[in-house]
Length: 124
Image 1 (cartoon, rainbow, N blue to C red):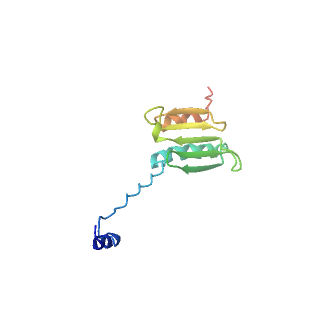
Image 2 (image 1 turned 135 degrees about the vertical axis):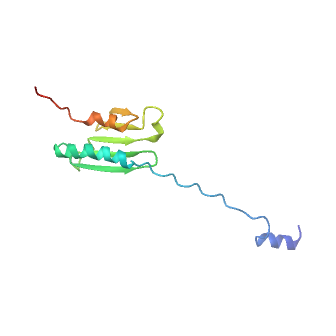
Image 3 (image 1 turned 90 degrees about the vertical axis):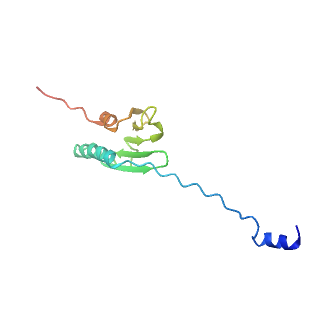
């Protein structure tokens, strides 16, 4: 390579370097409108009964979490979790108690949420 070719390479006239495109950031997992409707309907009933008082939602890359509190300064009573990666196995939805115990897991949110429904005694 002569001096002219070296100078051309130094100025960028040679092979063009194309940077590798950055990977697109993975979207967060969220609850869709129907899922939120089901969760908030249950939450509203439990607030009306005086059982629950506050909630929080967390959206991460791998899961979405709806946490329920009796008082806002405490640990959550329950966490309703959506993990799409588990959809083909145990089911994408689970309800987890305060101690970390999984109360119910499944493929359909309405069935999983039934574990939180208060027992209703029917008098004859």
